[in-house]
Image (cartoon, rainbow over the protein chains, first blue to last red):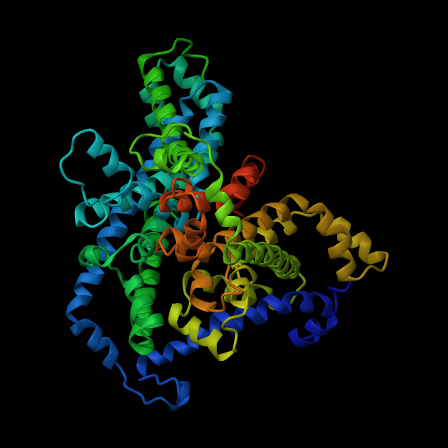
Amino acid sequence: MENINPRAAGPIKQLIRQWQLTLMLLPMLILVILFLYVPMGFLVIAFKDYNIGKGVWGSPWVGWAHFHKIFAYPDIARLIRNSLVISLLTLVTGFIGPIFLALLFNELRRGRFKKFVQTVSYLPHFFPWTIVAGIILLFFSIDGVVNGLLESWGASKPIGFLTQHTSFIQLLVASNLWKEIGWGTIIYMAAIAGINPSLYEAAVMDGAGRRHRLWHITMPGMRPAISISLIFAAGSLMSVNFDQIYNLYNPQVYEWADVIDTYIVRAGVIGMQYSQTAAMGLFKGVIGLVLIVLANWTVRRMTDREYSVF
Amino acid sequence: MVSGDTRRSGFDYLNIVLMVLLCACTIYPFLYILNISLSSPEAASQAGLHLWPQGMRFTAYRGIMDDRHFLRSYVNIIAVTAIGTFLGLLVSAAAAYTLSRKRFPLRKSILFLLTVTIVFNGGLIPYYLVVRSFHLIDTWVPLWLPVMTGVFNVVILKNFFLAVPAELEESAKIDGASDFRIFAGIVVPLSKPVLATVGLWLAVQLWNDWFTPYLYINDPNKVTLPLVLRKYVVENDLTQVGSFAAAIANVTDRPIPTQIVSAVIVVSILPMLIAYPYIQRFFVSGIVLGSVKE
């Protein structure tokens, strides 16, 4: 009835006419603008020499100086390298692990056992990294549980799991798997549940063995879920799991464990070098954006737009 | 699984073994910590697997109860979570409802504006500076902002609201009901499962968040549990609880630091552990909800 108005009102008039709806939208919109868009505006400090006293407008303009400094900064290569290495390792294991585990879950026959195992596997996901880090520290520090056990079994010297680079990185990857592998299987289980069971019946009648069914029915059925995960994984290449690293690392492993995000918090928030770290954050954000768009475009091209996110 | 294989193959047994290992791996650390916190100090300082408590004691827990700081932070996190979940749900659901009404002007543009924030935002430093310029440092407001500006949840709620039959709204309009009325009286009651799921998501997010309070809260009276937890468990700063331990007259009864840390961990994860069996199905269904494309 209201739609067939030949003199359709302009947007502002409509907003006022539907004032209740507008009102309901307003709080969130205002908050988003204030706290998500205004900070984007603040990003301009990456191009200025921000001085708290002078504020954003009063601070002098320095153009690309900070970015030049970033690339000239000897440690930046180290930070980028660490970000990439850690994130690649966690990404690959964190991507393959749940797929593998989902396939294993799928082969379980007893319903209650399967449910129990799945429920248990989701548990670590719900705890914050502070707790998990606390547990890891308890177990793997020099005077921790593992070293204590090793000593009682006759080892001569405790192993510095957390202070040696290789073992630290291994701990990062392993603990991330421990925490997230169960939870990660959910979207794959949902995808598997959506596979038409008659496909399996037909395959069995054609004499397809287990492995065959897995490769030709189950895996293709998971393809949408896999490609979405892949896109998001690719987009987050530059952003490591900050919570995990910040709670676990120590100066002895900075060489390989200090990443862009941890540096930004140390130097930026605590050290108050706002401009430079804002520049770093911008740099990282842009790369992340480019990566996710690239990944989405690639999947779009490869699967004829079927599985892309945007 | 399929009518084809009725016999258990070697692979099936291997799978079962792997699953048992997985469960053990997941549960063991928590079990260990629980047992350490309940053992006597001598038993706790001995190396070993500690599959059960030895010399049952509750002294470590009594120490925590005496720690005002810790208790305060517990109260705070409950308050922050309760208020934040309510606010977050209110703001998100209201916005989601509006965005689900096709007759709302500028709907698509606003949606676009909101989705942009998922992939790109100003970054940590600008965010921090904005909060600072609004004089919100040392208040709980920054803790609630993430749940009130979470576009992801709004999208999920919006999709759900879109599925509510249009006839309900139309007939209500004919009866003269206002938009507020329709939302509160019809749509919300119908959406209880989704609201519960999203609400739980928000609650867990708020309960576990240590980083936002780390950045924005300095006042010791306002700190939340995850933050205090971090101090004890990661930074190993046990001076406060340690003073209780030192106050126990009998030296052999004083809990060792690892016991205190363990007890702190247990007390912190207890609510989550208790609630877990009941709430986990909400989360699983939530993921499925979220992954179904429009």
